[in-house]
Amino acid sequence: MTAMNRNNVEEIKARIPIEDLIGSYIKVEKAGKSYKARCPFHNEKSPSFFISPDRGGYYCFGCNAKGDIFSFVEQFEGLDFRGALKILAERAGVKLVHDEKADGERDRLHRAMELASGFFEEQLVKSSEAREYVKSRGITEETCRAFRIGLAPEGWRNLMTYLKGKGINEATMEKVGLIKAKDAETSKSGVIEYYDRFRGRIMFPISDSSGRVIAFSGRILKDVKNADGSSPAKYLNSPDSPLFDKSLVLYGLDKAKSEIRRLNYTIFVEGQMDLVMSHQAGIKNTVASSGTALSEETNNSAGIISNLGLVRRLSPNVIIAFDSDSAGRKAALRAAGIALSLAMDVKIADIVGGKDPADLVKEDMEKWRQTLKEAKPVIEFELGNVVREHSGGAGSQNDPRKLTKAVTERVLPLVARIDSSSDQSHFVAMIADQAKLPIDSVWQDVRVVAKRLKDAELAANPSSANPNVAANTFTSPRNTIVKARTSSEMPKRVDLIERRLFGLLFLMEKESVNNAQLPMKNEQIHNYKDQIKKMAGDSYESRVKFAEENRGDLMFEAESFFGTDAGADGENWIKPMKELLSNFEEDILSDEIISAMHELKMVEKAGDQERVMELAKKCQALSIRKAQVGKTTLNKK
Image 1: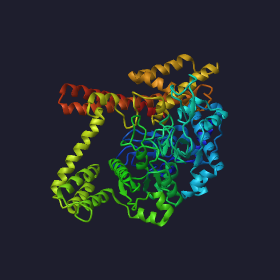
Image 2: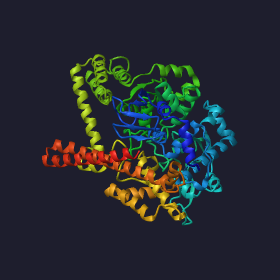
Image 3: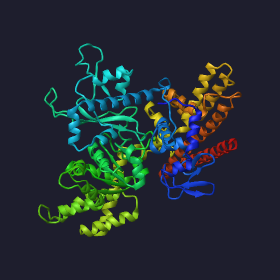
Image 4: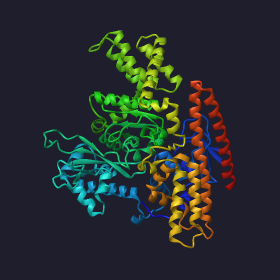
């Protein structure tokens, strides 16, 4: 994305005190010369997360998360280094100059998406029909520009031709889902033919939390039929790509995050129109699920923060305002269940009359605000629905058995997902009172439902019940996963030490070839590689392969942090390399300890005393080794 040097990074750091940056994300308090807080990267009740203004860094004694302002933004917002760089440069007022010669693969992918977004915006301006449609939905020109709403015109190769003229090749376009290849059966030439994925649609760019376009969602403009007589999908979304994982992003989060922090709650809607109209009405702490998918985990298999996981970090409070039809209600309750499992406080806004939020805002903005104010806790909301349906009133069924069944199927799964015992007690008492059920039987049913949910979770993820599998693929609190990684995960992972280690190693290799006067010799670089290999063990090959696939991006980051001048005696690079090696070994040992302790816990339950003794000794030896490495690292600082 940008060409920069070490001075740019230092200037950004100098302009943004780390305590101010972190304090804008989470609540911090003074602790002597330092600051402390509850760690945002793992659940804890007492603060173990410390911020050092003197060192410009942070460290969590609970989960070992550590770094500077760049790594904090990366970890907190689920961004790669350049995404964090964009956010911090804008905050610091530092201008970054673009140099396409320094672009890596991800930069080229981002450039293709940015050019596509600009193309769609231009096409909307040219089309009176599309502008009239957007206007008919109540969207103003100002809002249209703010959300970069555009038009994918009719035609098979409009965007592809445009991007080719800007130097973007077909492979890049296909990789980010802008074009598709014709089926072999329909391609008469025998050569792979491509066509635009989006045609005749109003386009909504989906951005990451730094504001970079990473995907699109397109709404059909005309209700026309396909050649086979079928109707095209009303909405068409970008496929997953190296830039876009629909479980990691929510539409509009880049524009809503500051208001979510300020107001301490999120409004969650379904569609792009719902979100755009809510923001236009001044309610800017709104995000949407459209074009994305909700993840049931806080982190995915690569340790990357999920979409609701990120919202949870910004605020634990959420109001869900989905469409009032049956499909909308069902989706709202599913979203509520996931949010409850993430220890969020969840309310439901009851939109009556079959309307969606966009229609309600367009019709009566104040009614939308009032609907949000009257939102109820999700369990209270759904319990009310169930009781009304079975209370014996008009159109309802007066059957106590059906009421009990409906409570068990629709309300208790929500109660079972609540982490707080006091909150569970509150809602169990409410259910017993309103449904006229014995409180003991409600508690018993809650436990049965909770076990059923747990069994379903284990069935979906059997490794969590298998100590051997879990030991081999366990994700540490630092979210470092050793096996089964793909190249698209690398720029998003929070394993910053490993990235900077390989980046600096690549930088050394490059300069040793280009600069004969460099004090680093090949044998010294080989020595570093040998140390990494010894530390990484069986995971070495996958780590190296992983790094090689991202060499360009890692070298960019290394140049940004360590500069391009090794110094007369190599001190500018050799000293940080030694520190990175120590930190890397610490991290490897931490992962091994966690894995061994996890397996120890499982074999203790199984009663395998011989294996218990082996693992206990292994944990002790690893802990001693980690303490020695940590002491060595501390003495070097």
